[in-house]
Amino acid sequence: MQARNPWIFCPRPIPSPRFRLICVPFAGRGASVYREWPELMPPGVEMCALQLPGRENRPKDRPFTRLSEAVQEAAEVLQPYLDVPYALFGHSMGALLCFELARGLRRRQCPGPVHFFASGHRAPQLPDPRPHLHTMPNEQFIAEILRRFKGIPAAVLREPELMELLLPMLRADIEMVETYEYAPEAALQCPITVFGGREDGEAGFEELDAWRQHTSHRFQTEILPGDHFFIQSAQKRIVETVFRQLSLEEDFTRSNNGAAILQG
Image 1 (cartoon, rainbow, N blue to C red):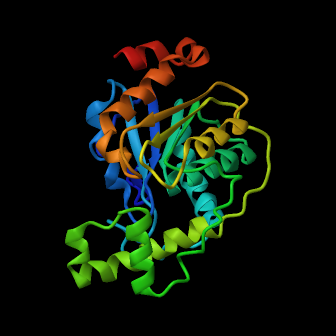
Image 2: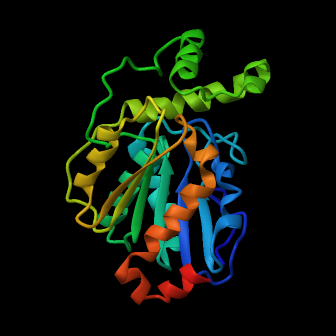
C-alpha cells in the first residue's frame, strides 16, 4: 500500500491491488466526486483520484492556472501508483488533464495506461471559439458558469462564504483549460472510450468523435442521458462501461491476471 499522499484520494485502499483506476475530477471540484465509485467496482480493483491543490484537504495550496504545470507535478506524484495495470478516467477538465498526463508519462518512459476514458470534453485539438471566462468580473463569471454548465449548487450560491472559497479555485481551473495549447504528438498506444451527455452543450457528438485520432487502437463513443453533469446522473452506467471495455482488451485479459480482475 502506498504511503498517505495529499495528492491521492483513495477511499477504499487495497493492500495488493491487481488493477488501478486513476480518476481526475472536473473544474471546481475535488477528488471526492468519485467517492462512491469503489462500491461499484470488481474485487481487486483500486480507485485512486487525483486531488489537485486548492480543494478539500488542500485548501491552502495554490491552485494551478496552467495545465502543463499540473501535468508535470501529477506525473511525478503518480509514478509509484503505476506499479500495476491502470486506466485513466477524467471528466471535462479532468479529461484534458488525463490526456496530457498520458502523454507526459510516455515522455518519461513510464508504463502507459491500458485504456483512456475521456468524459464530457471535446477533443483537445479543437479550440473553443467562445470568449474566455477566467478574465470576466465575478458577477459575469458566475452568470456564464451557470448558463454554460449549471455547475454551482443553489446552496453554495446562497452562501457568500462558500462562494468566496469556491471562486478562486473555479476561476483557476477554467483558466487552466482556456490557456491550454494543443501540440501534435503520436497517438496513444491504448484504446480510448469517450462519454458524452445527450443534452450537454459543451461537447457535441462530432467534437467527442474527434478524439479518435488520438489512439492507434480501438475507439468508442457512448452518449448518455443528461447534461454536462451526466457523470453524476449516469454514474453506475459509466462505471459498468469502464469495466466492460477493459474486459474486451485481449492484452489486458491475457496478462497480469486481467480476467480475474474483471470477473472478480
